[in-house]
Image 1 (spheres, rainbow, N blue to C red):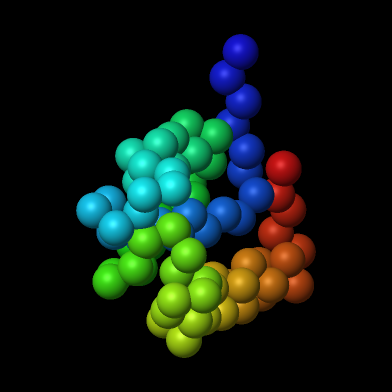
Image 2: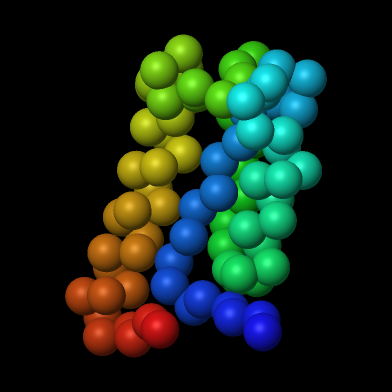
Length: 79
């Protein structure tokens, strides 16, 4: 059984050589569920980019959230 989700998704990983918690290749497996998801790699960090690179993390998340909010406000339906 393969399920594909159509809700907006942003997959953020750290650098493959620095993320020792979850292999980046494993994280990219989420693309099987969210084929239209946006993917970003946060440089110079591993698994905890939200903590180690908060400003850079926000620069990725804020535009994504604003776009998703505009889509919902414009009546775009997901799911």
